[in-house]
Amino acid sequence: MEEYIVSARKYRPTTFNSVVGQGALTTTLKNAIHTGKLAHAYLFCGPRGVGKTTCARIFAKTINCLNPKPNGDACEECESCKAFNEQRSFNIHELDAASNNSVDDIRSLVEEVRIPPQVGKYKVFIIDEVHMLSTSAFNAFLKTLEEPPRHAIFILATTEKHKILPTILSRCQTYDFNRMSVTDIVHHLEEIAKKEHVEAEPEALNVIAQKADGGMRDALSIFDQVVSFTAGHLTYDKVIQNLNVLDYEYYFKVVDGFLENKVAELMLLFNDILNKGFQGDHFITGLAKHLRDLLVSRDPVTLPLLEVGDSVKKRYQEQAARCTQTFLYQAMKLCNDCDLSYKASKNRRLLVELTLIQCAQLTQASDVPAGGLRPTKILKPIFEQQHTTAVKKESTVAATSQGVEPLPQTTATAAVSASPTLEQKPKSDIEDFLARSKKPLSQKLTLKGGKTVGFSIHDALNGNASQQESEKSKEQIATTAVVEPVQKMNKPATEENIRFYWMEFLQSLPQEEAATRGRMELMRPALLDSDSFEIVVGNTQVERDMMAMKPRIERHMREGIGNASLCMKIRIASEKEARKYMSPQDRFEAMCEKNPSLLKLKKELGMRVI
Image 1: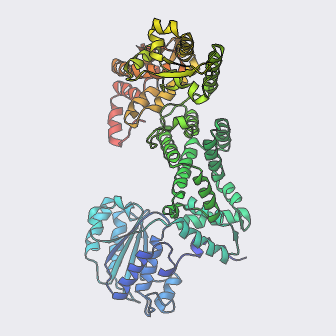
Image 2 (image 1 turned 30 degrees about the vertical axis):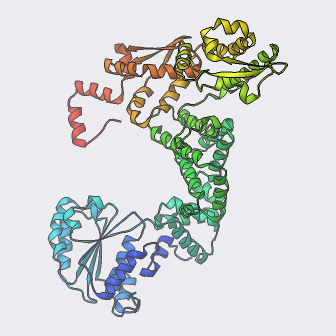
């Protein structure tokens, strides 16, 4: 049985032309070798698995080749190339700085630099993970790195360039390696699959490439893992099963639910995702990426930004054609806000579910703002949608009973919908709203016999006696359209709808009030009676802040619940309650009062309270 070699080692590039995704860097190095303009120190930096050490080895072998090819590659036949390929070359030294990072290790390296090469022109020293060197080791290396012998060339490789001393950076030519694109990784995996006689679907290789996150070594490792699982037959379903990837089918179903306003189906679909072991933040970030992919699919100019297979790309284009730009902007904003608030939320599942409900309401015509760029702040409760229909029917019946021809459906509700907040506002707010309006809200009705009469909501509220006596039908219509919604603003508050609209108010706060939202998430509103609820605060400063927020909170809660007399009471917590409602920062400060050494420990270790 042949010795098995993983693909990352078996198919490691041996020439500059075989390096994937780093064309600009390999061309620069080849031209430097061809013209003989070699620097004494190079710094290769970039993410893991993108070819830094591989390019360093190819560079070291090529500059020592005795008979280089016209295109600049090594001949692979001379003594120097054979010694390198058989790993017995004395001209190339590799040092792992992660495990050899002391001053003594650097001094040993400096001693070897003095010895000239026996075969070839240069001695190449490759120091991998150079950022792991200690400060003393860096200082011991400075002089040699600045003025090495003519035969010595240093190649430093690192994934964390910011950790290297500026004095080291100034002595090196820096080459920044980029992450490999999904397309480049897929093409390379297709070539390896053909050589290994593995059947692979393009969608399956695309999932592997996205999972690798721009690293070829990671992609080859995942490829070997999936090949072992599928016995050489890579399919999309088997790959996502083995890698535990959330299937894009879920995201297509979720967006379809948004477009069709199917809230119940969305809740069940999210529950199914949670049951499969995926976290809510993973789902919401994937949904935001899916919406972003739909956005770039709408325009042929941005279509190349969509890094998926051809068959999946068609599905994206089909679904994107059914989505408006306004909907995609708003849904992406809501998902981004949910992602930002996820870690601070105490009820993370509810937070994601509220986001799904809000996204499902974006396609309703009444929910789309004029500008189309900002999502609706107010979440409309689903369980009250039938109530609006009942009000419309009652208005039609009342008009018919008085001998008045019923208006069309779009006109019959004009008295109610003329103001977007007539039904939700308390009585005093309705009167203020009508007093401020410049034009009276009026409507003409057609009576039996062809005669028309007009009525005004202002007259109905102010009680104009002369018009009420002369036009009885107008009084009844106005009472049905205006007085009845006012009377319905007395719904009793419950524990459930208090908490529901409290969370809804927190979601409506803008990003600049994130600190206030985080503080209010720790509060738990408690129902006192059907017309009042209470919140408990920790100190007088928070009490003053909440008193300033009180009008906004009460207005939102009244509109949502439908109770014009609902009020919020604020009190400072007792000593026992204060311990319960203390934030992590407050608890830490209380601990520091008892033991001041904790504060000193926090400063020395650079810790923070979360």
